[in-house]
Length: 258
Image 1 (cartoon, rainbow, N blue to C red):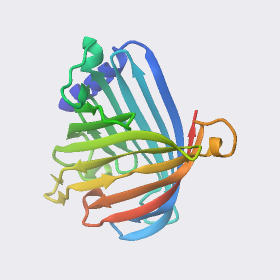
Image 2: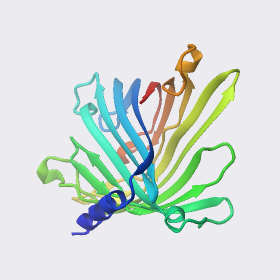
Image 3: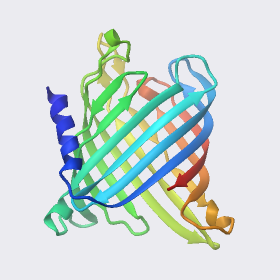
């Protein structure tokens, strides 16, 4: 019953708010060599991401879906789909005044859904956000959320169910001009707590960092800026997916912004 309450809250955060005031939609193409932490093998992997962010009078939302395909045949990252959605309500926007203190300019209430298709993992992530006013950053957020497991588990052919855990995440965006070009530094870093799985196993707590560094390619080639970017994403994943495997990988990145 509790996961239906969280889903209802997440939908309410989005549907009861006034119409969207501003939004941004992107497609990402990433290519690199990623690790299967269960077989401890590496294969060339292509990840296509659909990403959307929007703001409205009462808050915002962030949504992405990753489609992954690699060159292996081990049941990992083979035409797999994974997505997350985070709607929020901003206390500052609702009250019409600054509700933070010091360098914190706002607080928000979060909903959230994490979904993995092949692993049949479903988690709800209610939490809170602090938005920081840091020079040089368009935004910098810290978020703390409960991770409520609503997966179907081994009996349904998926990954093992787990008890509930928690997540701490830092996400940011910064841009700057240099030598007549536009550069962007964005990404996130998260800590996911360790949990106990059905049958008494254990998933270790992990740290995942995915910073992206890009150049505005359209502007560099003499065309319109703000549409086509290229660069790299560095992925550091300690205890990947709860195992004792640590991954360090650089992926080529192309971003097309609608």
